[in-house]
Image 1 (cartoon, helix red, strand yellow):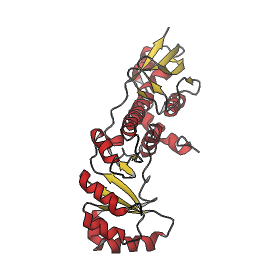
Image 2 (cartoon, rainbow, N blue to C red):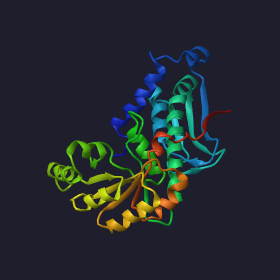
Image 3 (cartoon, rainbow, N blue to C red):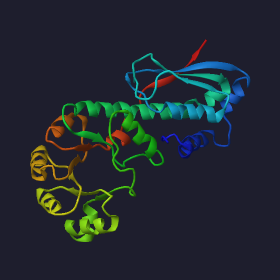
Image 4 (cartoon, one colour):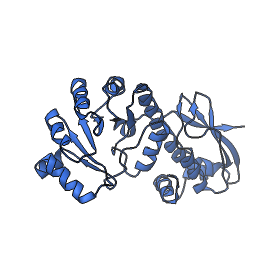
Length: 280
């Protein structure tokens, strides 16, 4: 089962309902003959990596099951300006009613995949993997995280229910790192990963005396990261996080961390420029 299961068709349905309101595209239905057939192409306007073609296909088919979609370039393909990604054939009002929703998905997800690929390339030659976070748009987490994987990145925990990440406020409320980890381990059992966020080496020392599986180095400079990796000495996974930009990835990766989490992959990626062109 992929992210494009029946459950995730609801994402496309919600987007179409948002755009169509009471079910009418006044412009397309008012201007165009209902039986007018057209052939259109989704064309790249710039270089990048494609993601979200299936969501685009779902959008067209939900408006009109008779609309035919052919995907020329699959998700993960590198495209350059002028490349045809999809061909859509059907009734003009139907195609145009779905156009914006389909393009919103494919341009947004392709932007995430393309940005992720740039981060992954910057870490090349090191063991560091690039991962996303929970800083996603409401309702779109599944497809945004999918796009990160298309771009060569890894997924962090999907939600609050599939991993434990003890952050500063948890520690403050609980009283100490050791108590927080002990409580988490007792509650969750051995199958669940427990990770602890730290911003000082003193906190890291406390984490190393617990049953945590991973440590997140929050907003540490390169010198502190290097010392932290040495202190951990491969006893647990080490993740770097905190406003990390593309130009810092290589230096951070060289410190020896296992993961670099980047919220910007999903909350700030610029959409890839794609368009829908009519063919004669």
